[in-house]
Length: 288
Image (tube, rainbow, N blue to C red):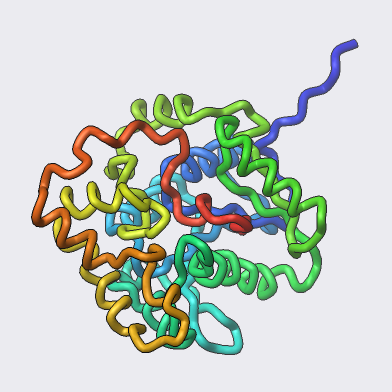
């Protein structure tokens, strides 16, 4: 007698599906929808946490996926309120970094590669507070778009789940289904719409986790780093010198000026990254 195989895309609620706005998490959402006959259970919700610095292509893509696939996506943004978030809509979503800048002003310092609190505060915490509003204080499942070729991140997510430090149990349907980046790319090549971003761009336009790839970002779309430079200048008086820059020891002004002086800097140095630049998936602990 054969062993019954469980469909990894069948999600048992209460659960959140984390939609980062990238191709991988969108693929995961489509597979989950298909497994449920196109309609999610009432206690399974899709969340997109908007920092205000997502690319317009990302916002359009999230909206288009929801519209084309007939699924409700909860658009969430950080707020300094008792609730801790506000549910908005595609048409009212922040597009100029407003939630992010407001949180920086509240804290008085910047996140950086050593302390990437932006993903925790603007995404994970926001989704957690949404979950509290709909599920109460019980545990729930959090489905994240980690693939088979992201073994390290899956291991970390499962370690945290086993520790019970978080209020959710992370599940990784794509990993369990043996999905790789090649599978995701193949899927989107067959569709009649797409995210429309290059791999090095990522959803968050000037994320410090891109490090050297920021030169390519600024070269390809001049002016992308301007908002990030404004934030560095706004916190210049913080006592912690490391908290004055997104990248330790290097300002975004330096990066912008360097690429202006030498436009061909690092051309050809960007190999294909096996991991999508989906905000949150680069940051440890991002699970909701």
